[in-house]
Length: 127
Image 1 (spheres, rainbow, N blue to C red):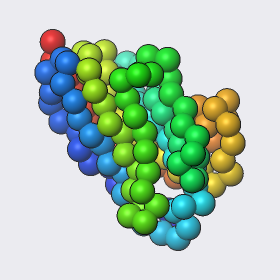
Image 2: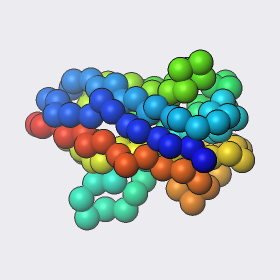
Image 3: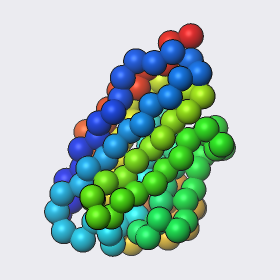
């Protein structure tokens, strides 16, 4: 079992930055691929970014590429999402997720690939 708790969300003006954290408890965090997803009101959950177990491979949605950076610290059992140049359309609840099986972007961009989910943290970007 893996428990995930997100933090770092909040209200920020357009063009600003936020850093989300996802702290994991439970065993073998370093063996899990991790992903960030978001869901805006009235919209389906969408993929944001993912990272493999070692941190060597990262994947991004086109809408956030070059603005967001996913990273992990396996010693701290934490994955991060650095979000820069935020836009109002980035407003959503952001959730992290853990996937024991790993894989490339096609698999890690699918929410059904993940076994464990956090409760989410709200990010609001004002114009």
